[in-house]
Structure formats: structure tokens, C-alpha cells
Length: 448
Image (tube, rainbow, N blue to C red; front, side, top):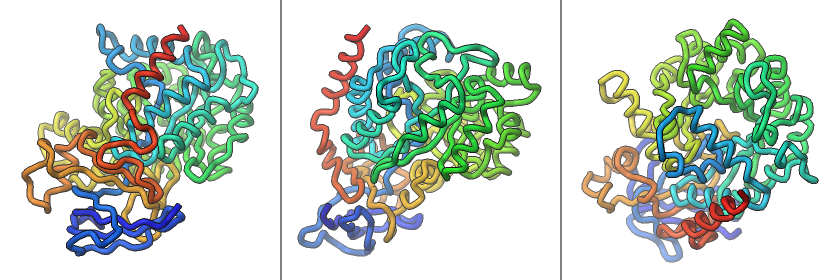
């Protein structure tokens, strides 16, 4: 890569919107200098008109769920009926079709200003649970897809062993299971990071990983210094079943087996007791909220304010990809708190952006990303300030315009490792992202 200089019309630096910011990047993909107060672009600098922000981190993704968008809106039901359709889609995937779909989905993320994704990956094997010649063929397809779309990935290889408390996997779930936690660990340990791909571990849920296997997954992550992610209390039924099986909540069960801590991120955490919230906060376990999915699946509203107050860092994900828009996820956190309390102003625009950038990257094992500062990764995105959604406010309120009014459609530029991946709203590596999405989903349907 070559060094490149970018001139941002406005940029968010250290919690303040600064005008005329020169950002110099190195051939190694790092920021080498940040200089505010430059009135115009110097010769050779690339102009970024709008508000430039640190790249956004999508801390929770299931890439294949993108194939359910709109399809899952026909009819009613609950999370559990939606899950049936999700399993049907999972049953169709092959390494080739998953690569094509994920490449298109990750390109859509880049168009939305996302520079890093946490892929919560559990479709490991072929139909009926048959192992591929390369046991990690599906994971490698996802890593390659992110690279082809120009974004970073943390592949969160997920342990999934049971259909429920005391229930054996069946149907599409056979593709998810390695049989034992030890077999999962052996397969996951064969994966290798790259320059733009890092690794993590995941416990699908206390429903899908028996209690006696939780510590194995937690130790795997701890011994290797990897982030550990897990679905937690997304549905009341999970809590009820766990109480019947173990006499304690999922949060307490995870704490008993050493699965909580500063490297752990609990996803959703929607239905928690006060004691659960205190456990997450005391252990510095992060929480990943996915407001658009939690609304779409009728999950409920998570206790974001209480979790933050208890000491749990918050990050954001688009999860099922009902939409891919981290700005919508960010303001969804505040809006949910307003609905719960009937009071406005729980989170500032700056706090929400940190959840969508710095804290999300930290949860994914990229602590050097999420800030525009020398030495950090040269990953940033620019939001237009002259669209019908963002035009009007003075520059000092540009961040409020971006977080509370802009959408993914207002993203004009995305830079990853100093490379201009999205330029003026056009993806430079996947030249027709809608076509790529249509083609990938048509190929998936053709395998039925």
C-alpha cells in the first residue's frame, strides 16, 4: 500500500467536531498524523466532504440472515417461528454460496461505513453434519469474503452442541455441532488470523452449550487471549428453561463457569434481573445491543442504561440484518430508553458513536481502531452533511445530525487501512453491490 493523505471537511476528534482536518496515512495502513484547522485540501490530498468519523464496528453479524430480509416480514409469529425459516436458510449454504452472499453483505456494510465486522459463525459443516475436507471451509469462506469486500473481520467461531437443555441437535442444527466442546476447540484452533482477519470464540447460548462444556470454551478463549462472545437472555423462555434445568439464570450460570469478564461480550442481554446486570457490570463484561433486530424479532427492549451504569461497556450489531445501518442501531439505543422511561436524553451522540466505533472494535479484539489519532488504524468513514436528512444544523451539531438523523444512505466514503473502499457512495471492489446481493441470493435459492 502507498501512503495517502485525506482532507476531511469536518472530523470528530477527541469528542469535538473540528473543521478542515488533514489525515495522513502510512503504507502500513496506520494514521501517522492528524492536523485540524487546514482550510482546504492540499495538492494531492483526497477530499472527504461531510463529517469524517472513526470507522464503525458491527460487533454482531450472522451474514446468512441477510437472505431473510423482507421474506421474514410475511405473516406474524414470534422469535421461535422466525427461527424455523432461519434454519431452512442455513440448510442451503455451501462454502461457495456462503462466500458469494457474505461478500455482498460485507460490501453492503462498507457502504454503511462499517470497517470491521464480528461474524458470529456457527454453520460449520455440510448437510447432516458431514465434515468438509477442510473442516473450516465455511469459516475460511467468510474470512475471504470480508477481504474481498475490503473490511476487517473478527471470526467468532461458535460452539453449538445442543438443541436445548438436554436436547440433541437435529435437522439444520447438525451442521452447527462438532459433537463435543473438545472437538469444537480442536477445529477452531486450526484457524489462523491474517492482516485483516482476527479470531475469537463464541458460546452460542446456554441453550446450545451444556453447562459442563461452558468452561472449555471460556478457557479456550482465555488461554489464547481471544474475545469471547455469547447470546444471552434474548428471550424469556431461555431464562425459564435455564432456571428449570440449573436453578439459576443464564448470566449466573455463565459466571459460575468462568465465562464472564473484560474479554467477554454478551449479545442482546434483553431479559435480565437486577442481579444479572450487577454480575455483568462487576465483571466488566461488555454488552452488544442490536436494536433493529430486537425490534424486528419482537425480542423486547434491553436495559441499556442500567447496564452502562453497572459498568458494562456497550457496543452495537446489526445481527439478522433486517437493515444494515449502525447509525440506526446507535440511535435505537437512546430511543429504546426513551420508550422505557418516557424521558429523553439518556445517551449523548458522542456516547452512541463510541459504542458504534471504539467500544465495538475493542469488543472484537481491535483496540487500535475506533479513534482518529496517530498510531491507530487508518479506518474511517464520512457522512454527508448536505442530504435531505442532514442538511441545516450548524457544523458544531454535525455529530448530532449524523447519529440522530443520518442513515447508511448518507455514507459517502469508507477508508480501511488507508485504502479508499467506498468513494462517493460507490464500492471500489464490488462495483454493483445490489447485483451481487441479488445474484448470491438467487444462487442460494437454486439449491433448494
